[in-house]
Image 1 (cartoon, rainbow over the protein chains, first blue to last red):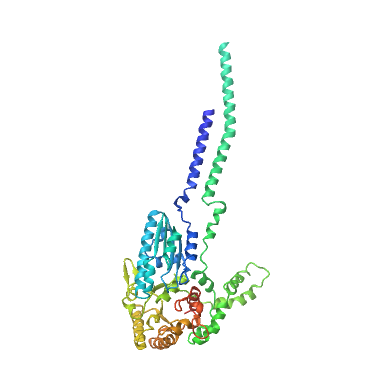
Image 2 (cartoon, helix red, strand yellow):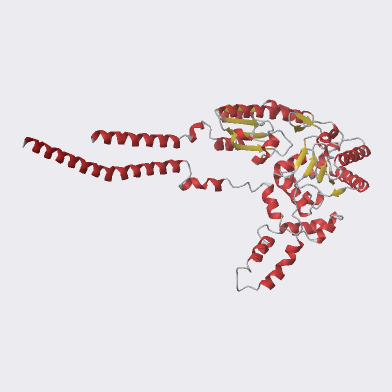
Length: 156
Length: 331
């Protein structure tokens, strides 16, 4: 009898641990960066020449044609009115491989912007050369501003 | 005798076993079910399918700044006849348009539709009177204004229109520095792996309406005649590629007073001179000219200081005004 009870208890414990294990599977991809806080800091602690506006996720393919939207789990994109190259793009990818692809897409975006600003406002090319592009786990951030060192400091 | 005693004892053991087993089944099985149900509940709760997790859908409400919201609200507005007439006389627009825009999206016509459905369920209301009150508005409502199957061609300010209004319903061939000369060869439009110029991209699809805004990057040109002839050539090339499309030339938007006063190239007298030439050229080419100055300018014809951070590129709210003006005037 005692043996049966023990077996039963073991089975219950096993079922419970499996269920709890599954439930905790979702936040496995979390990284050390809190993207909302980081975005907020990068927006407010850096001085921008132009005003930055939040972009709708619907504009992803237009702004970042080299990034596959299915790679993106979370995003915060802020772009200037068009007079400067200033921008902030914060992404959380679905996994590490996707984060790598997003990083490549953001590099392509910098190249694209450099091309368009070279003949238009050459002074903005400097900001693009100093752009801070950083990846940590599944998070990727691009900051184009006049204060790249401050951006790096915030991302630490 | 000994055998009988043993048999009795066995029977007794068996009865005890049966009793314990019954007791076990009565207590243990409901207990197991209870524990499993609790575990399943915990699992679902942690996955967000129960309790507070269900609010996820409401958290993902659409961005109220996007164009979609605007068009949904504006779709119901019936544009009065005066506005259509004003298209040929832009000076009348400032009076009529704000009135139109003042129509709070939450009010009139949407309410009318609701009212219209009420008589069927409300026995007290007079269906004939109610219908008579609301019918004219509904009958006169034409197909809702939409930007579907339209194309915007322009420079950084047109690009700003897309980015700041979220007008993804339309196609945009817009890039920083686009002008009436480089529009023929500047390759920036993605088509698979390659990049196309506007003129090549125009061959890839068809549009019912094409909006163009060019000219601000050409303000420094030596000859205004060259500018207008180059613009005319652009119109002709577009027409060749899109013979069915309605072509709309949008006026060049003014710059701020500070910018205008301090810049030998980007100034409003020059912009207005270019716009005058565009009006004539549009008439000659039989295309629509849309005067957008009333949409963004103050009473002196300047872009207000808050309308552009650098004096030229509009701020988000001014891009919104531009879009609202197009919608209100059904341009």
